[in-house]
Length: 408
Image (cartoon, rainbow, N blue to C red; front, side, top):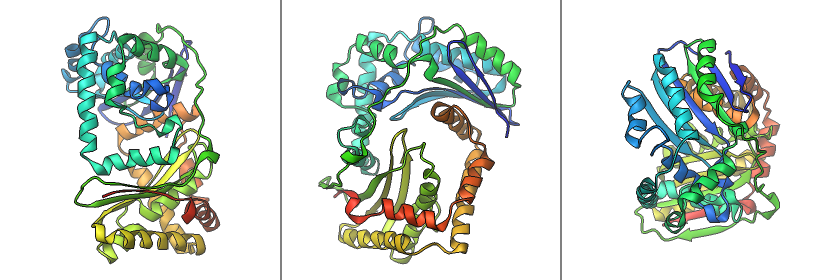
């Protein structure tokens, strides 16, 4: 799989991956997310992600929304704890239009006061709807429990009180302090030739003023972690539970084995160990899954399930039993081979989705300033040994080091 890259004098980077498709995907990635907010800026990154669509020096909100939709395209954005992304999908004849719009909303937004007022209300509705979904809220609350006072603990949406306090000047100050050109990547996936892509890229991004800044984050202190157990009454029909621990960052080589361990335990496959134990064999839970999320300096592993209140303790005991097996028993050759094939296959299938690939390439450039080819990732997974899986299980799945959160 081939990639082409280019760096402008102002520091903005481009990565393009050729594919055989009439549909193009491109996005602009900023190495800024909710963890880059100061204590008095909670929810600011996500608010700005909404507001960049509300008016620029040359476009009203309607014209921004219509620019790609008028030619059958789509535009969207998201904020995570460490990045902001604006991306669009379109018929590949419209690259210049797409790059023009992406550059305009990111670098020339004017943040109209009346739109700030309206968008705050929209996000407050989003916060309220989130509270109506315990399966979503419990993940955010669990990260707050595990990461405690570090900025990475705070949820992305912010709070009603914080949002209502922000002025237009606060918003502009956050952008000026965090949106440096050397922390920005444009990612593209299409059948359009790289010279043509580069022409449009230089036209719409080379005139952006250079702002260079080294990203300095309040690094997570592993020694500060203390396992906590909390129960919150939510008056839900089901009881929702998360059990988990801090673990390896996205720069730690052990992340490959951790991904494999997570996939084996509770990945998307219906044959995962936890799904087989709790759902298929015992019929105790409709939804049981494990997740491994990585950040630049830390990761988090968590097992989630929803069950009838009367089955809560039994489910927890069964989960710990599966943890114990992985800590005490090495995977056999056949088991390990099957687990590797499954994970490699899932990665290959995900890469077939061009939008997913564009997003993955952009994130990889932000993190590593390179993209790891599929064959290289697959080889790292193939090199994992049963001893490594067992060692990681004994580091992460220690009962007295696990935190838990229950909604009931």
